[in-house]
Length: 319
Image 1 (cartoon, rainbow, N blue to C red):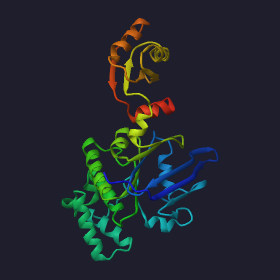
Image 2: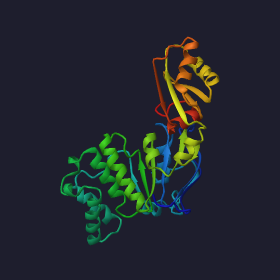
Image 3: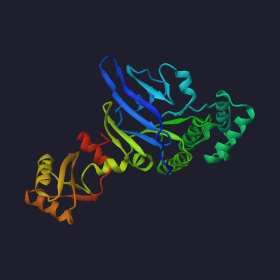
Image 4: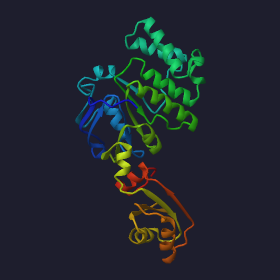
């Protein structure tokens, strides 16, 4: 992983978007993204991630606050801002009247490349993104994963300072998701600054140097994935499934299991966060059974970004 620069290439100051006079999609967001890092916005659907990306890429006008990309105020100078950003939206925006190669070539020409340069870059990117064999095919013949790779290739065709990816792997099968992760890793190694929105905790953990956890338009926490997970104060997460009053069970486990930092009901389970306690499973079973609960399932994992989100909001990231 390349060393992260201290140069700020993207900044928001109290960035806010209000819809219909009262719905705060983004609420006073302050962020800084550094040159060469993959920065993630992690949160559930409706958290304000896409709206934030929309304001940074000139597609959504802020209600208040300011946003800068490459030192350019994106509201005051949207045309200049568009020259230094590449955007991959959630929906497929490839031109279906053009071939795979033509989608790249004409994008380059639109951004001022000479014909010769656009041809060279299109060929280079098709090779890098494993699409050379599809160059002459219509984009409608591409699989979802291939189409997503082509959209990323097109977005970086004009060598933008910052690449924006909005839920880049939503709807992709696991193999296509891993292939795109590999491509993004290569771009990262080349020094590309990337901002991505996602509600997949594994994706944020795998790709991001730093990430901001947001919900209801507010910034809840910011740091590296490791820093955020370490902040839970736990090294073991025990998930307990049992019939009965799970809120009461959570209280019992939090108070009676040695080393328990907290216990939270999430859906039909109780998640117990435990620190430095060996042999924790028998302890959990004993507390539950002693209080009349019959445990039907139990599992043990390390803390994840899901754990962080639950601690911050009291709810599952998937809710």
